Length: 342
Image (cartoon, rainbow, N blue to C red):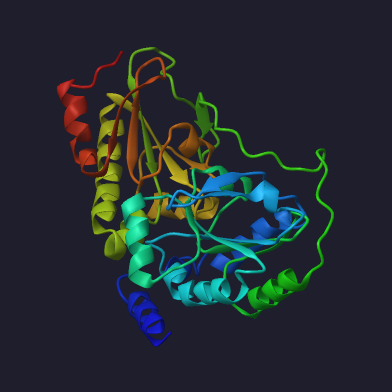
């Protein structure tokens, strides 16, 4: 336990601190989780089957009516997640026989190898799954970490951000609660279906942005990003931080040149409309932005990394994408005409 606390404290003091600190002027992590919880309390949890990073299947629908469930959403780059890991591991070790406890990685800027290394480095024993977007979408994920407690009947009874007395009390209530009736077919929440291809988005200025060029001539670049990437990931994922800045600067140059249509698509994780407005103002962003609060656009275009630039032909179909270090070559590829428009 001492080692855990030392590591958590060291990480919390390094770099730029945690996202909760960065969001003090806006909503805190607790406020974001509470806002989500209001719409989820008493709702039947989704019928989703997930696979752990070790290849085991956990069918949540088979647990409802028999065993309560504790889902914790987290990320390897998330400082408060690391700070809370001793609490989470303790919950698993003491309550794991009575409650199905699952660590749900958000799958943003993650790899299977990286998640496994994190688990081994910190001695985690609980089952870990990497979300494919369905759980985050169904449970309206807005902040990491997020704790979701589901009673024996399959209803959501708690949503929170902090590992505090409220969570501890809710876990004890969950453990001792009697088995409730299983939801009938009309009450069950179906698993989210894959997001359908999108034809456009509404920008933060309230304007419709079509992904296919109305004039049928220009390429369109969809710049997927998280507004806190440049600052928050500067310590934990410095390469990603630099790539986010590169993508922003290139996008602004291209839209100014008028050769490519560009829109920035912001993840709703740790971001609301106010945060996006602040990001646009502070960085003097020239391109139009849209907030993908539901995560549907990220899922529809199979984006799990910030930044990712998806290039569409004039007809709106994908012709190329840039991720990781490839982002740096985006502008040069456009200017040289190396991107196939068909």
